[in-house]
Image 1 (cartoon, rainbow, N blue to C red):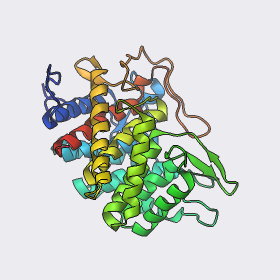
Image 2: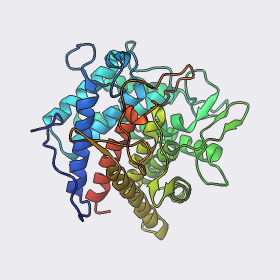
Image 3: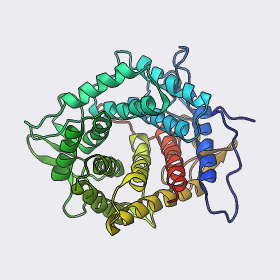
Image 4: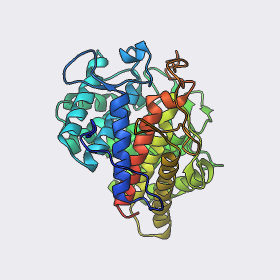
Length: 391
């Protein structure tokens, strides 16, 4: 039986087999198939649209997209691009266009919203979809997002860009992906300014990790350390190292990667994990670790070690996540913590909720959250990428 991904799922447990690119590709196919069958639905009966239902099993509000979580859908689109780049199929190309259209229709007022981090994630996904899959229908949306991200730069207050419109909180989850998006759109100088601001303002001198953010102009720093903050800075600095040939960017990657290995992994598996918005954090780190492994330039011992360690963390994390998955009707359900066995959601009780502060809480069983399953799929795609490169 062929899956809705457009490819036939294959057995992926082979005793004694070292995972190969082909095996990781099969596992990524199965992760995609699980998302498609459990979560993807047409939006409000509109032809040519799809979005991800944010919980499984879903509540009525989730099934009808009353709750839809803009930035989760941006990552759904970005991972759909991963799959299409790995093995192009007509079904995958149609899905990319349908998800992009679904985001535009559900957002009602246009492509943009009040959250700069949300808009940065969507800009990254749309740029990749246009560049690699010839998605031209969202070109106007990408231009609108670029204008918002570029115009939000606020050095007079002392910041990069704020978390959302008229906020005093300037954080890594907005500036990191915005820098990546703007760099890929040709705004190299602004991207470099963002990277320099992140390094000068939010790098913890003790741990070497990137802190969450800072309130300006008061200067009060929010000190939580999140895995996706490390991921976006690693990605931004790596791509700047490629585009600018400036040694400081590769040096920052090497230093931050060492801090990530020391403080955020256990036996090379990315530690912890959550649900709700947090369900995406470790997957994002894995995505940009793959960027380091594949793209970081330089032949020195530090650069070579950074590429090797980044690939090793991706592969170890993916191996653990796969080993600890549940099989539900032949398709994987990933755990929110890749080092622990996944739990099967018992129903719709305990669904996460959108808070007044703008974040989404975890479901009581985090495995029901789309974010957690997207991270698992993202990780499988990252493992394929690094093994396909021989790393």
